[in-house]
Length: 285
Image 1 (cartoon, rainbow, N blue to C red):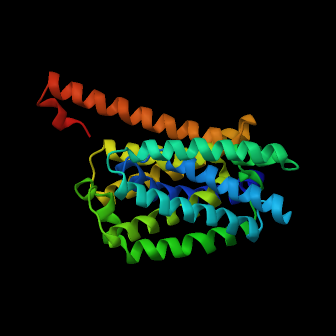
Image 2: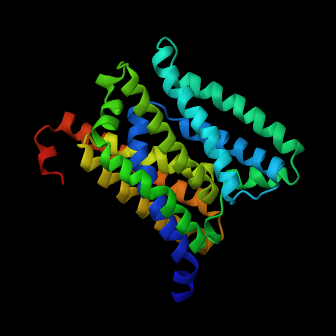
């Protein structure tokens, strides 16, 4: 038991922080119907990291690589926010998809000419959860702390952007807060992908939020469900991967998917019982 705690303790702490932050952001992402923005952002940040490697010969975990990635994220944030206002006739999800395709093509081109380019692809997909360290926690503190402060201070304007009734809002203030949202999202995703890989980041961002929306809860109820699902799936996934020698990221994503499936089955069963025996549903927990 002590060996298990020693090996999985730090990865579980990192997963808990990622599940908490990405789960909360995921509610905004799912309600705004920009599901694939995390893949696009991750790919855009990867282009910045590869450019930093080519120009400055630095590693992925360096400050220079992070700043280059964030520069690309900043450009993408302005582009997405402007496109939402200036191109209302085009689905934002379609614009995000096109951006992903272009950035993925650029990343593949750069990987082909960068020394050790295949390592960038491997880290982008699988992350490095089992080898996380205290330095990674400092990185998370440096990135997540200002994000939490911004969300606490700007909860109302960011919430209005997520509200479908305000989806057609325009103006410089709306555009500015939209840029802030994409910058926050890009900062978190850039760091999260480096630690956990794009598969697990996508799962953390989308699956718990989708599950919480299925339960028709209020905002705080959704947040609590998202956190509970993400943290519990992280624990089960880490133990599953450790005991059976599986990859950590896909194992956690598997348990997130199982949680979503189980919730959908229970919800459908309750609705079926309510139709067949309307009075008996009140007796169910």
